[in-house]
Length: 429
Image (tube, rainbow, N blue to C red; front, side):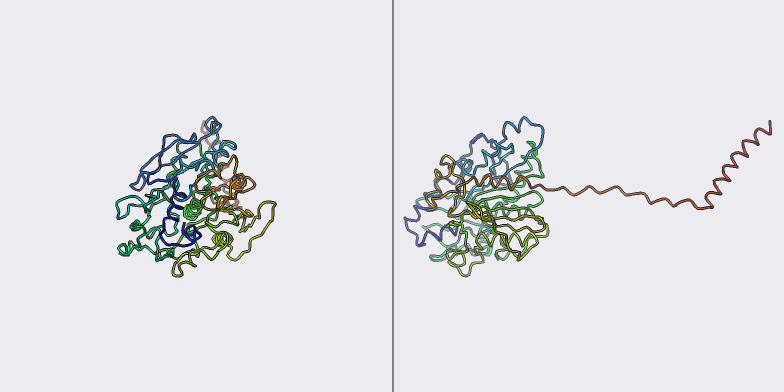
């Protein structure tokens, strides 16, 4: 999001760029409309961590009629979007792939921005109103939302918790909201658990995807729930986790992380989440910020290091429409699909479903992938599974010692003793 802000140019609060944001995020309100059924997927709503949370589940007819368990794909929407608006369930392609290949697809809804001092949900602009929902993906999320200092974008380190809320910058008369501490990792765990309890899910083949901020959240979920996630294949995003001091990227993940396959599909002309660590990243606009953008190839190297191969160079394989960058670390593949000349929407624009979205043209990124990138993502995911640990073998009995000569003599004596008893009975008759 901050990268998106930066590529717009000037940061003075003027109606011109406020209008841009109004258009860009106009599909999401403070509360997303959640009908019982959307695109054939059914709504489930629970209370998680004291907050009402929802998701949509699509089960193809072929899956419902079958007896075997099938994979689950969790598709995470982009920033400030509603699952049910602006073709969010359609443009990534996972709905049609679920029908074609017979797996279950799920679209969770992110939580609305937290309640701010103004008493409403989410940060507001006068011309826009409350912005809407975003994932707690780890980038500026657990401090004070999106912080501003003068005309530059900055991130903060839990300013609200440090008693600095009264110093929060003001834009268009509104203070920033409080921390976004939504437990989205826990929520997504609950989504998977409940979908698996209700439907025939192969729990060794749970896959996660997402676009933009959804891709960032997908990578956070992999980093913190690798016991559940078999693989990730997502679009136009990078890992944005930070440590307790706000330092990012993390040098390593927790000891509970298990290396898993990861693919990121990223256009090399992306100006929203830049492919290159370009001049308009966080660090350039705010030198004191703990966050920086590594770029797509830097993100790939980061995951190679997390999987146990720091410094290992990626192997590049040119194709007609993209270049494949791969780091094979002890059989765990981290991959980057560099889509040539494509911006922030590296999807196949079947029937104009991508270019027809409200957020497509506003970014100035009017290019789409010339091939089916979602198919490429599915081909990568479908081979991955979590191999359950082998069951412990029952304790074996200690081997018996071979009989020695004394044992043999004893057995002969015992045999003669039985014969002696038998003859003695006959003799007494």
